Image 1 (cartoon, helix red, strand yellow):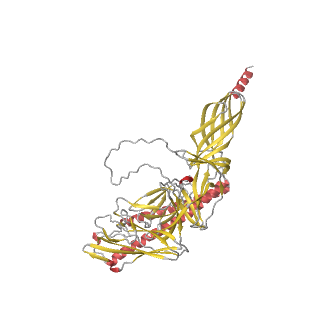
Image 2 (cartoon, helix red, strand yellow):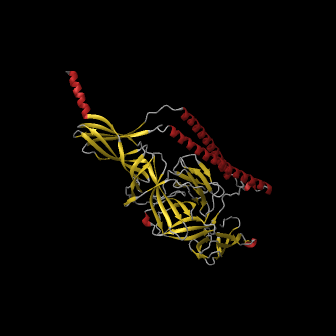
Image 3 (cartoon, helix red, strand yellow):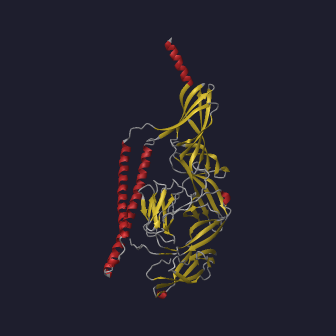
Length: 618
């Protein structure tokens, strides 16, 4: 009798408190620039009573605070929790063991190369801090001074060349490491895989099948805006294709799901700031206060390699600047033209530094990032001139693959004060690989005004530009763009739509059929001395030639330097037919250049400065 009573009691407990697992399906995904919101539905047969339901096989990176149970179909919720656990590990195969050995070997090679670079950096710093001759060295002969300079020039060049060779080897090794890791993942996709579970404690009023609707945010997904800008000729409209490069690595493939593309950010701090009284106090000379602002450039996880150019604020290339992926040992240096290339697999922020300049940081937002360095507060700064604190020595030392994309039909656009959401009419499949799937959001033909631009003081090429009007209605956001002109791929640009200007200017690359040449027509008598001053006269001639079979409009610009020091005088300025900005001394010519014709423009100025000092007039 006692056994029967215990059996009945146990049966009653199982009916009223059961631990049940159930699967769920994805109804809809809202993909943000960083992150995604996933809406799911589960269905389960339950008896009347108390139950613990485990919604299993979910993403392991769910934001627990974002979990929302939207409909329990009449059940009452008594509790909710989330956990992520690792799947049971399988025995490691011999193939994976062999790959692990190769991975360790490549990592060791990268470590040794980085150590060599660190040693070269220390040697370079030592050279830079000890290359000035002091007053005790005045007894040196001319031959000894030449030998001193030759050693530093040769060794400095050797350090940069060795570092560039090491960086090239690091890039190749990093690419090999990435391939080995991908191969290992293919052989053992479940290695270290984790799955998430949402546990619900519910009370059911009756025995029947119940449906559960729930949603949550995940971190490991997002989309990156990208554009294709195509012009067939200067008489045609610009075709502007706006696409989303969607990616996700949530651990679950999204198969045939309804998709929304949103410009919102679920992690944004929406708390209104409170302005407080500003009380002045003394700060150090190097104090640098910046207002908190929102950058229109954000990290792009799809960028694997970055190329770019580092220049100073006068447009000159910076040789030997260090370019580093923040938080890693991956680094490179710029070459003689200021160019660099670096692998960006393991970082989100690019750091650029050079002695005498303020270090620059920027998110890795595109595959081409150009950086302008600003001289630090400790440097002697002259606008359009630069006191030479360090020597810059002279050293001797594309095929485009277009990924397949899925054209999209946008049903409508939801817009609120902070974001826009594009509702797509068809279903999409995005695998959980972290690789991108291109989805076209819109495709428009836009009116454009074409013109040419040249600034030969910086670059002796003529660039074609297209000015877009009425572009605000196209719902565009900043992103990288592929530029095509006359059926040729021109290159990539950063399409910055966060502008208050009514017109948007797009660079379409260099036109080799229009040439520009800038020459200094001075003679050797143009440099003279007057007392303690040196006097330099500059007389420039710019020749612009049109080899196209039609008239083109060219905007030509140059500059007259401005003194930033009382010891430097700029006078006898002649600007010819140029329009002159009184504040910046930028010269502008608007030229209608006929087919097969050429024009010449001239300007000149004179500079006085102490003969013991050096300046860079360009």
